[in-house]
Length: 167
Ligand SMILES: [Zn+2]
Image (cartoon, rainbow, N blue to C red; front, side):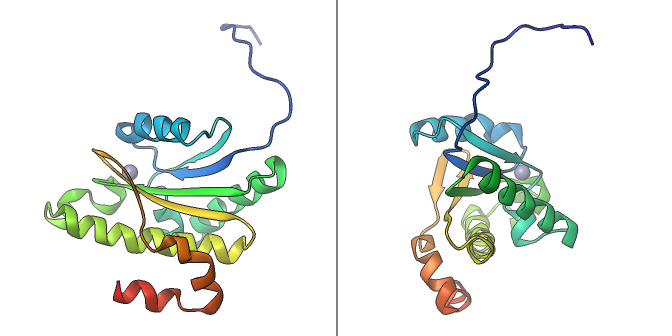
């Protein structure tokens, strides 16, 4: 091998402030990075894949969902992660973009809310001791999913499905 770039990276072990699952869409990457900084998250295990939360909520196949759950499991095991942030975003190509919702941003946000809650429930059922936070990334900022603060208790009582169907 031949060294082609010099940079001194921190070499010590670390505890991750959070694992962050989000889409690889470059348009949202700066907002996500700034949001994490604002949240005081300096050491994040970034799980960046097409669709972000979609890989858990509406996976294209079983492999995809299992693979992402394994990534979260490894972040917890290797870096003692206690917090998982799960994100999806507006105009995501894996959902057919905003065009799939005929340009209706409210309908799109409502659909993503359901997706994010379902992804959150899956994470909570797999990792009951971890705090799960779903977020929707829009082109004007990042939105917390309302009702997700009850995710853990709702899942544990089996009421989650009912809750988000009527919401
Ligand atoms: Zn996307």
